[in-house]
Amino acid sequence: MSFIEISEVGPRDGLQSIEPIMPTAAKKAWIAAEAAAGIREIEVGSFVPAKLLPQLADTAELVAYARTLPGLTVAVLVPNLKGAEAAIAAGAHKITIPISISETHSLANVRRTHVQMIEETRRIAELIAAQPEDQRPKFEGGLSTAFGCTLEGMVPEAVLLGLAEQLMEAGCDEVGLSDTTGYANPAQVKRLIRAVRGVVGEEACSGVHLHNTRGLGLANALAALEEGITTLDSSLGGIGGCPFAPGASGNIVTEDLVFMLQSMGFETGIDLDRLLQVRELVQAALPDTELYGFTAEAGVPKGFAGGAY
Ligand code: ZN
Picture 1 (tube, rainbow, N blue to C red):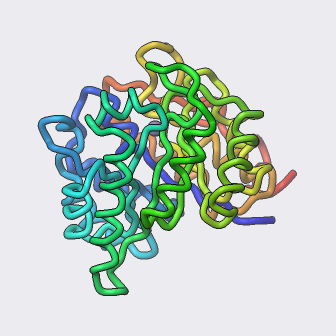
Picture 2 (picture 1 turned 60 degrees about the vertical axis):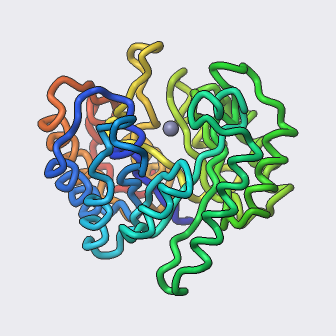
Picture 3 (picture 1 turned 90 degrees about the horizontal axis):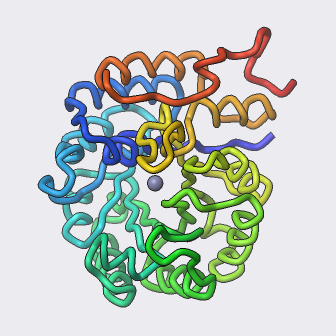
């Protein structure tokens, strides 16, 4: 069966959503432990001003460290050209610029309109193109609030498709659908993947970023898999949670996602037992933060060998 890439986003999406600041040494140990468990892509941080997100102030150091881990793709988020300059200087392998389909959300978050964000994307693409060929990071446009927005409610599909097309024209290598708010449902996941691919082509839309705010995270992941999506974002222990939905994890839980994939016969390259052990290290560094996940709680089934059964 086919290979599914898990992109661990806990060190970025998870940590930016909680108050405690994880010490840099603990972050490095976390990243190294997940890489050793077989995770091949980790979003280690975001190049935003430290005064906005002090939790991620050490992103440059983490990129430099993560680059020393063999076979690991080091990903980061950048909100603008300045962030992209820092990401390239640090040596990130992959950079993602998030663009909110809800313009209200975009203005509230990054104080930029859609037109300004596309212009920023174009400048970043030019910066990347100016790098030596072997040092150019992969460039993704993240279509955030694609499934709905806490400020605007439902977002028009036409706006989503228009922005997907403009991001590609501006120089992104691919676009990814992002359920920032946990509004997605499986039918919508399927419909929007098909619609976006209809505009940008199948190759240019291979990953989705899902949250579990309303308990539909894994159902949405399965829907995405059925559409042929090959990269799924998730976070160890589902760190981040949602202040409005007690008990709900933030991103989908990496351990549960890996269990689902492996029990269905997908290849992930990940050692589930080793992955589950990483939780201890993260919990020790964040003693007051809740870690989520059913597989850790229940244990892997008797006789589970990581293959289809
Ligand atoms: Zn997210």
